[in-house]
Length: 274
Image 1 (cartoon, helix red, strand yellow):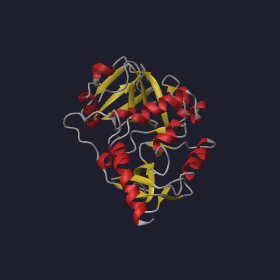
Image 2 (cartoon, rainbow, N blue to C red):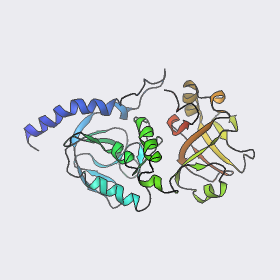
Image 3 (cartoon, rainbow, N blue to C red):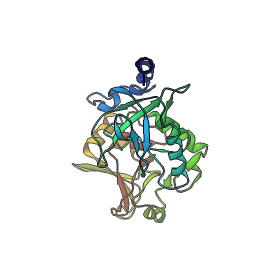
Image 4 (cartoon, one colour):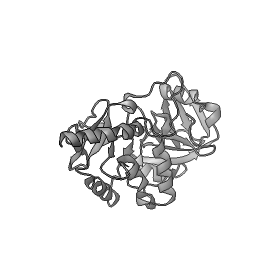
């Protein structure tokens, strides 16, 4: 890249970088809650050099990376379509924002925006809008893109991409056999919170009368405090229908843990307030 081209890219990045660092409509953190470093990390030019056999990004400067806040589909044909979408971005002048530690596979979580297109393309937004990725607020230390949930909801309502497949659609918590068949997978569930058990280290959202057999959401103490500070504690959730997302595990009946408040959406009265 020539010096003139680099200067042009960085100039474009001033405006685009603001959009990366502070998504429109994102409210300020709750008092005492500090935003993660990833939400205000340095933005730098980079480009997609390759995709690994597993579908991980290989950036020319940063190296191994993955898109923050989203999961690609885990099976064809949607995974193949998502990877093709990414390959089509290879070599495009891009701005990359990333911070934090690499994961166990050596990948850094990043946000990427192509600036050689008109208009610029945010990669996570593009994949989610097309129904080629699922929002996962719990992948990183901080969830910097709450707008992804609205983009996903629109794609789901339009049955785009993977949302045309029953495998990926939100499951009712009463479908115990279907839930057990999906143990080990990242899933979306919907149901009414029947009871809440608050303990010293964690809180349990119970969705059935038989807590040892039915679905449960496990919330660590820190996350429960964040939710309570947002006005989404016991009184706000008991008896309410919610949508939640996580990796399903065998515990009593079935369960998953959430570590970021945005992994729960209230279906009556909107999402968690910020």
